[in-house]
Length: 111
Length: 115
Image 1 (cartoon, chains in turn brown, red):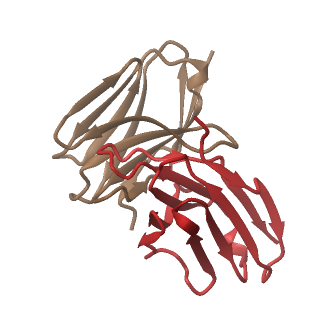
Image 2 (cartoon, rainbow over the protein chains, first blue to last red):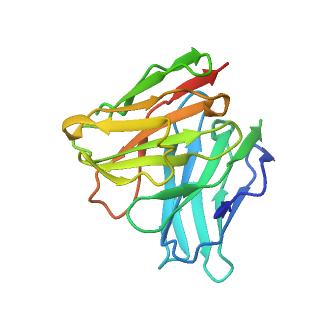
């Protein structure tokens, strides 16, 4: 039973345009959500997070939106750059640091 | 600041053989995690340590997997005997254990191929 779902395995976007990566979850106990970015042959690195008490968090070109009623969050990257090409994992936490990850979405930013 | 160190980076073994992976977390990080990432999947938590005590090992296949964290610092993950389905990247991560953010810092991973 997948509690964190990323239904798009891949996404291609033109450089300079907006990238929108989506994530759905089923566990209403999740109280913190994170996005991780992973390059090939490297471990995931933390990108941005949001607490369940907020609906938006912004960090430079990256914005995460949380819709608790829909159990949905999204990551917006504006403008997209070729260096953003990576696999993006959505992760959720219930309790103390026990992250549950989605399967990931591979983003390709085309120059 | 040095990151999470893991070794070996790559390991190829035959089924029924044994293998061990080593992890050195970021200095001062109380919490250490081992994740298994199978190709095309997200990382799945195998075991979580707080200092040298186990917090969660509910998804660790204990008939073949074992892990320890000596003196609350380094950790080893062992698989014996290995099965074909154990082929995966084994990721070690650490966190301060006191922060609210839940941010984990991952190592580069150890890729295991079981033939």
